[in-house]
Image 1 (cartoon, one colour):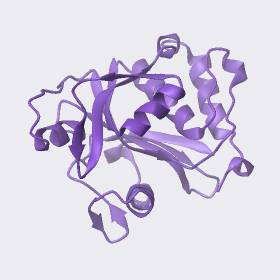
Image 2 (cartoon, one colour):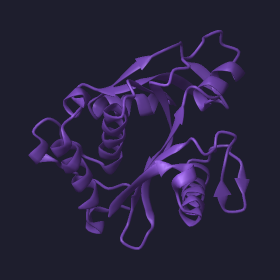
Image 3 (cartoon, one colour):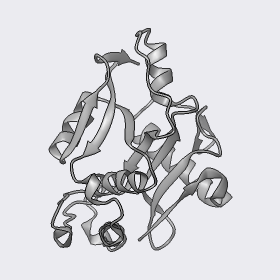
Image 4 (spheres, helix red, strand yellow):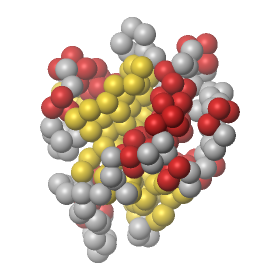
Length: 214
């Protein structure tokens, strides 16, 4: 497997189509989110050239995981959800704070990065999230904001991440929802440490399909 990353404007058209199809498979077909589709592709009002993607591709070019990152200097998902919920909480607009959305991955299990000595994960999702956080931190982003369900918040905490809640839990489309900052207490060790970032990338790229658990 390999990692591809870049702004939407820099990515090939065919890859963007694959991203849209993968988002439909994960968030509409599997999770039943009430989202908009154009044919086989899931898109929303926040899809623009300033989105930044980190994508895990298989040997045949299939997507195994991705995260979409939105600058908070433009309208972003958490801000709109909170406003639509009628809650009087103001979320940040700052070029050093980005939002993580449309994050999902295949269900690889048994991931282990003993060579890092600082962190150990048990799924591709947690490893990919850590890579996203480390990559953004290296490029001057201080915080990642995200809107999640209480169950995802618990999963983040079990995986060693921290979640700083920014407002009371609210209901959106019948489900409880929370917005907050996601971090990991070892992210600061990644800054200016190319060897650790390289090991993270290699750990993802060296995953083998036999780790897939249906």
